[in-house]
Length: 319
Image 1 (cartoon, rainbow, N blue to C red):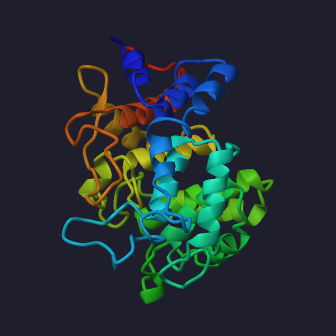
Image 2 (image 1 turned 90 degrees about the horizontal axis):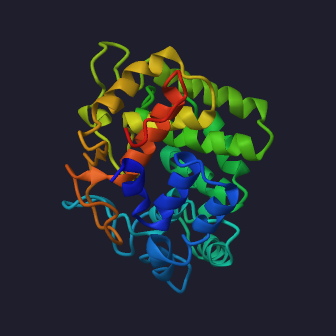
């Protein structure tokens, strides 16, 4: 069995992206497969779990009764992380069931931090960056969040959720969440110059650090940045960073090369990439077979990045 065949033996959430990005399928075939995300498999299971009040598991960022991460990790079953899964799955925002579910969430979910509606945003830039991505994707107004993110950009070009407590240095984790949101907002709103400028400054923050190194010492900022996870949640790793630059559509900057080679080196003899760093916490259901096992999600993502990066532009699918 080739890697491509193995990837296609999966949920519609993966299959439609493989067909679009790796298999060269027609738009009609891709659209037909994507339409299945909301009606069967993982996407349908998530939609089935929505509470009557529009939330998931009774809360916005954390489930009802939870104050945050505990000894078993952070629970990932509340409204925001569930919507992020639907976003990563590529659930069609025009699908009637998806549109209705997001409308109910927008109406019924309020942030624990400030009591504001979901698409007003929260206080931390990493959360707000993800909320911008969600708002753009599902068709909700997030201009106010974007304005606050632009105001909160730090002098070194990035963002940090600890800035409200006095931090003046950016973090990889906060910055990638904001960059993804700003890029989505740009594309949906005619590339406003001030947003593009802020995104470029944030990208430079990552590039100056070769996507994973400390600028001061050159050492890896965190070992976890070299380990591939899915879903990424709020966390950074080199594959997530490379996915952003691929999505931005520019030719690869030479400073991403080292991160690309980190990803390339993780390919296993069977042609797949492993899951290495599952972020602990309660989940709706498992999407992979566990750390150390072949990961369809990471394989899809890695192959997309390598196809973008490699100079000849040819994918190595099935190699």
